[in-house]
Image (tube, rainbow, N blue to C red; front, side, top):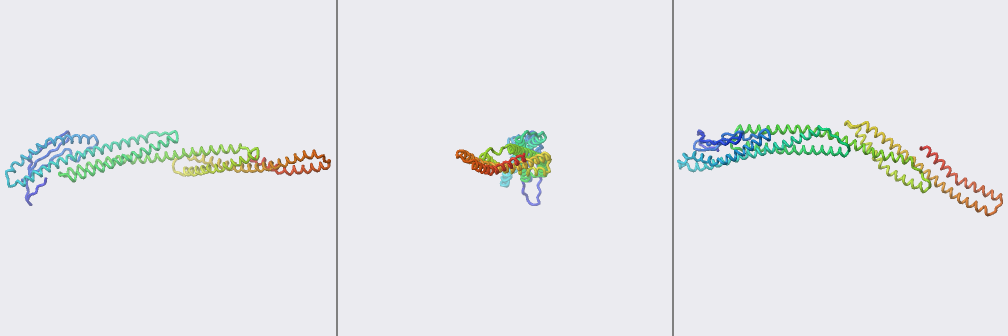
Length: 422
């Protein structure tokens, strides 16, 4: 409570009485002092400092426990404090002409008591906030330890799915670290803001409280920085390992796709080598239709090959330590298969087209031969003379030779084509 005297007049301050309240290691001393005609109530001593928060969660919990007991004891002593104030006012009550002054003094003393209790209740809130801060810090530290153990242990995977699960675990740890970090940062900001406000708003602001606030904020900042340094290191290692695992996953997926594409090309190449050209025109036309379908389907697989080549080039040009020799060899194998497939597709199309020409010519020859055979039967029944019959046979012979020449030529060309492709 502040006193208002005449300018230039100094009053001596006398401690009339004091009340000490102790609970565990916490102690406060409330002094009733007289300054001139005014009686004041003052917090003379506080152990520990009102802004002392402890060095860890256990210390803070001990401080909070002691402070709860101290508050309970203080409120139980409220009647005794008022008795002391009444005794201090006895001599002043004899001066009836100063009754208004003493009424104001009584009111001010009541406000001082309420302010004192409020300040101690704010300290309780400070310790509760600090306990929450240390609890958040502990959870953050435990999470950091878990991630450190996770990174130090050998991380094995047997398949692409297990590798994806491992990457998801990395992402989960990264997310939880960030969440714990943000929670602690928010709580530390809330706590330091509370300390600064407490330091400035208190009725008993003094250098000791200012120093206590400074020490507590330093302690908070020091712990926060220590944990954040550990988190930053872990983030660095997590990111590095995630990049490595993503690279491994990319290679595994590339291998899977490459194997799938390779198997298709190898099987199709075997089929192209083993497939016939058909035993008839209709068979041949069906094979041509299927070959056209294969050309369309091959475009999709060739597109997949180009994608694999592009990905392989990216992996080979990357600075990461990847299985470059393996990728390069697989990529070369893909190139060879693709080239062989393209060659066989062209050859088969050529053979199918030549076979189609042969079957068409053969069918025409068969039609002519059928008519010749029918005509020969007719000649036998007509009873022609030998010279006439010989002339007719000569004509039929030329017709047979003419109609089969094209088919024989195309057949020979087809045989040569097939032989050159084997």
